[in-house]
Length: 314
Image (tube, rainbow, N blue to C red):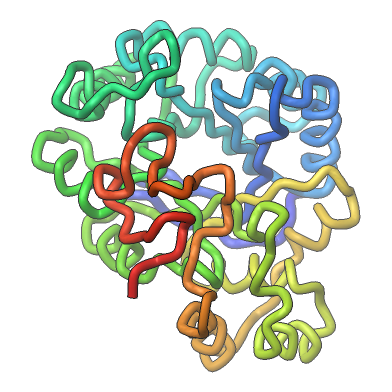
């Protein structure tokens, strides 16, 4: 049976399950491990699976979906356009569709606002194709009937402002890093105003859950007799943010999708954790460098108000 979780509406009428299983498993995509993880997730009640062409495991995710016996209509499936495919959006989408072995994709995201050339070098926004060009091509995918919704990932207010000046279709979703150390209050407010559903990747800090040890956070987990991860997931759901977490451990899968109701006061307490010394930061160490560059673009180009290393400017 599907887990008892809410669904959040997007601006085109489609609904996204509030908790999803993320499929990033490092180099080579995890292969059979990714397939087993997704099979177990679906057995545990997950109906939201989030992968990407850049994860290199779409084939295995698709195998798990087909073998589950769950009707395709009951599974919300997201995949993403990788940065090297900005010049071949339609072909890249068809590649993902074939790899997944499904007739349609629920949500197709532009994985990053930056493009990479065939050698993996970043392409400046001033060169084409840039994310404005790519979005125009993604809009055309809607006419194929093979994708229900399109959106973006890792977009800041700055780059959304640029995109929305040219977009005919408002992105249905913007998937970014969100957790108590990086609550993204300003971005959430902006997306709400524009009708864009904000969703969270790495809601548990991707192996670096700094906030788990915060005494206020720990006290809330203790008061509900649940794990810190459950509190982190529940916090986002209470804010109307779908949370996409990855775990290959079945017990953790079950816990992560077992949402608890937090009081407004508890939500406010967690929302203020980032204000404590050295807490307002990204927890994704691989995304940051000592010179303030991520995937070849500077923090300024990405629109991230951060210092080198991922700390947010106060």
